[in-house]
Image 1 (tube, helix red, strand yellow):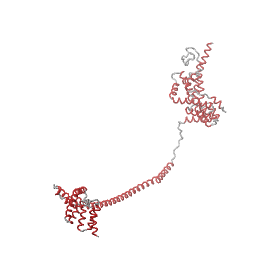
Image 2 (cartoon, chains in turn purple, cyan):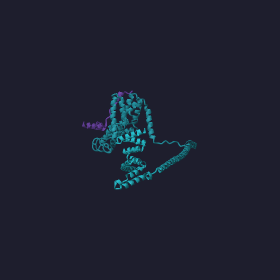
Image 3 (cartoon, one colour):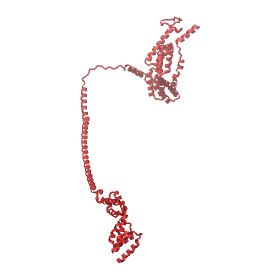
Image 4 (tube, chains in turn cyan, red):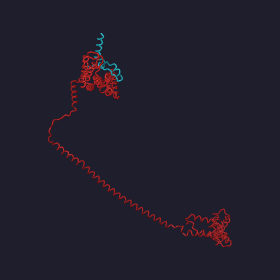
Amino acid sequence: MINFDEELEKFQPSPEIEQAEDVINNNDLTDISDILKELLKEKIGN
Amino acid sequence: MICPNCNSNISDKRKRCDRCGVDLTIYKKILHASNQYYNHGLERAKVRDLSGAIIALRNSLQLNKYNTHARNLLGLIYFEMGETVAALSEWVISKHFQPDNNDAEEYINRVQSSPTKLENQNQAIKRYNTALNYARQQSDDLAIIQLKKVLSLNPHFIRAYHLLALLYMKNGENDKARKTLLKASKIDVTNNTTLRYMKELEIPVAAKDIDSGMETEKSATSSIMPISSYKEDKPNIMAFVNLVVGVIIGIAVTAFLVVPSIKKRQNMNENSDYVDYSSGLALQEEKDRTIEELQKNNNELQEKIDELQTQIDSMMDVEDDTLVYDPLFDAVQYYMSEMEKTNKNDRDLMGIAEKLAAVDESKLESEVSTALLNRLREEVYPTAAQQHYDRGHDMYSDAQYEDALVEFEKSMTYDPTDVDPVYFTARAYHRLGDNEKASLYYNLVLSDYPDSKRVKNAKEFLKQVSDSNE
């Protein structure tokens, strides 16, 4: 059975077009390559 | 390939960077894995497994954020699911990582080139947010109304379908919820939310899959024309039968519809001809009657004309009647000739008066003639009357009573206002012994001239006459 309130909580407001800039800026663009670089830097640093 | 350490261009076949010497084996594996996820995402997108495609593409981008193809495809999938902002953000980021030779630029331009469509999608997002608020405030009806509007603005907005289906299900409108979920499943066949709700409504997922499969198959093969198996043509008797039936129907239609109308038209024409002829005859008769009446009127008028002409002819032109105007002309001529006499005493006024008295005034038609006559009489009569009275008085004095009576009579004619000729007429008759006439004239004096000087004498003589009669 579906709990409507719980299901309703899962729905989030959709960002409007005026908010696209914020969405882009808040986008996390870290990929594994970046993580590997960090690991390598730390390794080299140590 | 770009070295992740020093960002230098290196050959794909190299295992180490020529510049910084970093080991590229793992980096290459990561790139490979990213591309594999991209391929998986593409396959899933082709069969409309958009949710699966999103997972694969996100994995691809988590491994390699520079994977432009994956990011662009992810943007496309977001756009197909109605997530316009998410799509634009992926394309913008894609363009940021690869400014040149990037399909994302074209996608962004296409979206921005239609401001109306973009505005509709923005309105859809706003109304979706409004509907979500209504739903959280338990205003399900308002939320449903808003969501319907959202879906009309953006028919690909899957989250709106989900929310609408949820609200229908909450209100017990399962049929509407089913329809809504089926629409959503056409966009994204493996959407987790759609499948869960459909399971709740006991919509067989397998049957739905089969249906969708059949639909896809149908769509795939719809362009192919089915070819029936080859059959030889049998001799078609039905065609001949149809022909005969058609001929019979045609004859029947002609007999029952066309012929009567033709006959009717003919009858109408004949009737109209008859009517024309009859009306023509009637017209002719009326003309004859009119002519006859006019002829009659003409005859009557002619008779009247003749009658009037007769009257006219019978009427004597008094102007031309010598019996009427000759005495007048004669009197005028005589008057003029007498007036020419310079000595007034030589003028025969009594003669003129006599001639004037001979004119029958009643027969004079002309006013001028009448006026002339009266004028002459006015001028001549008083003097003539006096002259006759004087002559008569002289005769009376000479005992010529009978001659005197003639003169007195003329005097009275010319001047009826003078009492003397009347009085002496009575005296003359008295002298002659004609008491009756004497009484008459005495009474005349008394009656017509009551204020005259002769009244007293007339009374006395009248008394004498009366006494002598007794």
